[in-house]
Each structure stands twice: as structure tokens, then as C-alpha cells.
Image (cartoon, rainbow, N blue to C red):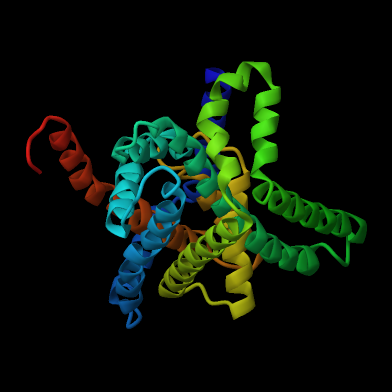
Length: 319
């Protein structure tokens, strides 16, 4: 397993290097792009993108508030703090696994470990939103670049995406079935008590979670488009939507073991899809890295404040 993870990380870094740094004037070009963005009359878009950061994580806090009510009463402020702690602890862990530990530690309930199932449902719901929107984005590329030359392949991909969307919705609204599958696998049975909460959410609650996930997704999407415009990626509204949603889709479904918040997969996906639309790789890369910096790196640093407060509280020191 360690060897496989090392190979995936190495391959990701190699592909990024090949895609970006093989040209001798790359750093000069990149410096010029960043300078232009800083002097652009559209630089206010960076501030607007930054102002959407608390909105993004606010949607996630609303989701956690709804999910956590099954374990203990929770205010929006408490939910937001738990999300920030999870964000910070998950920053350097593959697939953000530290997010589970952060949110569990913030709970006062004795049934803390049962929160694992609630966190999983929240993440799965966000994945469903990404797949639903991303399938629409990829459909644009299928029709634009594959339908005329490879109609059979394009039709097969369309059917595959449709099947995937239906399957994920069925799983989301039948969480008890997921628990039953885990219970049927003998080595996984000890985890059933921690996942059983998944089956307690009603269809109405799942629908609310899905809408909140779509709201958070929309914030991400708008942020990415604003940054693309700032870095002079000029496309039609449909191409912006298709490129960004397709990028998020590939980032979510492609296995990743990056040690820094899946950094790399999104960048490769964005450069490939926007490359099909005739855009320069460095401009797309600049927007993608800026999105990561604003939504993950900066909030993770801010979240350190909540992590320190949590540690002080555990020691009995007023925070």
C-alpha cells in the first residue's frame, strides 16, 4: 500500500513537472502573469473571491449543524468552529482524514465516535453534488470534442455518467443499505456502531443536506470563475461552467493520496480541460493554485486559533 501511494504521488508530481516546468521560460512567463493580475483593473475580483471564503465554510458549518443534531444540540457557531478545527487537522492528511478527528474532538457527547458516520454522510453528500454538476460539465466536452468522431464512445460515456448519478442518489437516500453492506463484510463489522447513525437521517434531511452541498459547490464554482477571469482566461459562460465543474468532478473521483489537501489532481484536471478550450496552462494553473490558497491554506492557518483554544480547554485553562 505504501509503495502504491508513493507511486501515485510521484506520478502526480512528474506530470505536473512535465506539464508546467519543461519550457525554459516558464518562471519568467509565470512572473509576468502574476504581475499582470496584480496590476489589472480587475484585481478587485481577488478581494471578492476572498470575501466568499467564510460563505463557503459557512455552508459546510450548516451541514455539520444539521448532521450533528443527531448527537447533541449544536449552534451554528459551534458547528463553524468544529469545521475550522477539522479543516486545520485535515490539512496535511491524505483525503483530509484529519477532518474526522477534528470534528469528533469538538463534540461533548460520550458517543463521539458515532459522529464518524455523520461526517461521512456529509462528505458523501458533497461528492454527490460534485458528481451531479460535474457530469453536466463533462457532457459539454463529450459533445464538443467526441460526438462527431467517436459517437459510440461519447454515448457510452454519457450512459456511464447518467448511471453514476443515479447510483449515487440511490445510495444517498438509502444510507441504511450502506450500513448493511458494511455489516455484511466481516472485517468491517466492528465499525458498524460508528456508522449506524447514517441510517437515521430522513429523506427530508438528506434533501436539505444536498441543497446545502449544492450551495457550497456554487460558491466554489463562482470563486474559480472569478479567478480565471482575473488571470485573463477568456471563455463563454457555458465554457466557464463546463470547465470548472468538469475539473471539480475529476478532482473528486480520481484517487489521490497527496499529502497537502489533494494539491495536484485539481491542477492537472484544470490544465487538461481548459487546454482543450485553447487556454494557456500557466494562467489556468495560477487560478487553480489561488483557489487552493484562499479556500484551504489560509483558512487552515486561521483554524489554528480554534485548535489552540481546544487544547487549552482540555487542560482546564480558560480560552
